[in-house]
Length: 271
Ligand SMILES: Nc1ncnc2c1ncn2[C@@H]1O[C@H](COP(=O)(O)OP(=O)(O)OP(=O)(O)O)[C@@H](O)[C@H]1O
Image 1 (cartoon, rainbow, N blue to C red):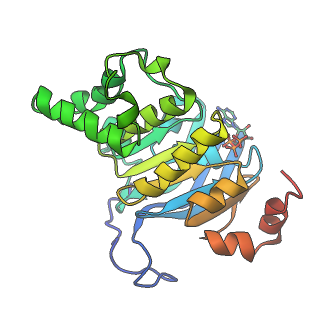
Image 2 (cartoon, rainbow, N blue to C red; image 1 turned 180 degrees about the horizontal axis):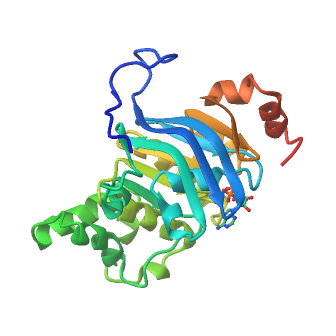
Image 3 (tube, helix red, strand yellow; image 1 turned 60 degrees about the horizontal axis):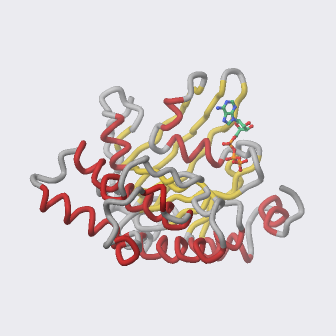
């Protein structure tokens, strides 16, 4: 248990004043599924208003690490998380943490768009309603509209808010899921391969959106696409066999990485 406040405004070792503050921090994070160890002592800062891409070959632990950041791994029976993960300096695995509240602060968008079998309006209104974010219908309407705007979907759906969310195209459904995540005013948004089920046009729209969302949110994205990591992120973390190989500015990772494993992966020599 560690409630020690990590100062998010003061520069850390190796960090200059111009670096964004550290929003979340993984310290010596280990994860076991039963007896199988999936992550080994991962130390990874997540910077505020920054897109951090997690890359690496299949099975290296990217999604496992992502799921640690809002305790989605709690839902997996045999999963044990060790080490420490902080959000604004507070240990998110502390027993005093309300996991429902944590997941409102650290939202998630999944690989396959998964709207609820309800109307477009209800998909977005559900979270704010259960978290008591609106005092009346007018406020809820406003949150729904703003969230759909932030997700770049408002113009396409404003005349059919009462139609089923599942009736939208795949790309629209994914933007609806982003609107749903945004509606509870999270601080961090986790995205697990959010474009893998989308066509190139829908992918381009979501990538454009990620750029815009960074102004208001901290984003962590798992992606198999090197091009996507290079396009959307400012920081990139490379994983291999459950270890964090290196983390650095995306430009540096893609032009002159410190580790040969990163170079080999980026060049398509494995994975
Ligand atoms: N629920 C689970 N039970 C048991 N083992 C699991 C579970 N989820 C993941 N693993 C194992 O943990 C390791 C890391 O998996 P993870 O899904 O985090 O990797 P990944 O890098 O996200 O892979 P991919 O790119 O294929 O999605 C793998 O060996 C995987 O088989």
